[in-house]
Each structure stands twice: as C-alpha cells, then as structure tokens.
Length: 227
Image (cartoon, rainbow, N blue to C red; front, side):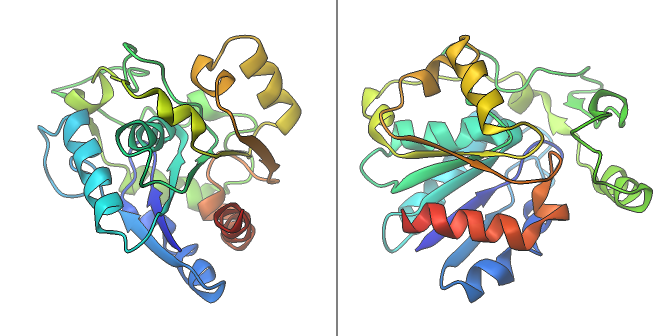
C-alpha cells in the first residue's frame, strides 16, 4: 500500500528519511511529501496549495493510500479524507488532532515578514522534546523552514460528512492514548469525536518520533495500513 507522509510545521519531506526504508522493508510504498512553502521555496504558498499537493498524491496512488499527518498536518490528512473519502483507505495522525471547519490551520506563533518562523525550543520544553539531544535540536532549528502566513493562517473548510467513515489511527507520542481519549471527550477535537472508526496507538517518544523512533513508527504505520 502507498503510505503518504505529510510532515508538520517547519519540516520538509526529508524528515521521513529514516522511516522510508523501514516502511519499504515492511512491504509498503512510502511517499514523503514536500509541501508548497515548506521546502520548495514558494514563500507565498497557501493552505489550499498544500492541500492540492496532498490530493495530487492521493490521486496518483495506484490504490487507496494511507494518509499520514504529523502534528499540524493532521489537519491536512483530515482534509484529504474530506475531499477524497472514497479514495483514502485511512488516515494516521501523529501527535495532533485535526482543526474544525472555520478554524485557522496553525496560527500558533508570531508571523514575521509574511511567515511563521520556528519559535525556538521554549514552547516545546517537556514531553515534546525530551528525547531530542542538543545535537538533534540544533539540526532541527537550523533546517526549520518558516511556514508561509497563507498556510499558518489559512482557514480550514470541511464539507463532506463521509470523512467520518474513513478509519482513523491516532498515534500518541508525547501523550498517552488515555490522555487523547480524555481530550477528545472534553471537546478538544469535535471532528474526531464523530469518527466512526477510531483507534489509538501508543509510541514511547516525544513529538517527533520520525526522528527519534523511526523503526517503531514505521511498524505502527505499517500496522495501520494493514488494518
């Protein structure tokens, strides 16, 4: 099965480099995506541009792919399920919940000169970055790509309720499945609260398991694809 890999904020497709060979060895065809404005130099890219790139990958897949979204890109994976419910086999959300209709995609940090730069490690101290050593943090910060304002502040639009029938696997890195369930029950993700098929998988890592637990993450994603 094709497994489309969508990185979160400030990252391009290379963040999946250690996951790709593991998924290939498990018999899948991983397709890491570099999104407009996050690795291709398109500073004026919008959320619609990024969604078009994801949908192009969905449409190009020979069968129904598993669409994987990391962190904020969980919303992009969910948008793909909304736009192509009949073409997506399932979605896996790593460390994130999808935004609801009418919400901003990822308006989390200050925008400077038309883009949202990586804010440094302060906001991520604790469980998020506990398994990243200083060398890994330095590499991440040096490679971080400012997210275009048109992406970060893009408005999420959802239209097809068939998205709720697409199977969802919530991969829980810096939080536990129990915590994820509590957050959803408390109203933090009205979209996932309506999902008909929702599974939770724990992974012992921080917020970026593709960097710190690539083999384990590949196994989790392969199992999600198999299910």
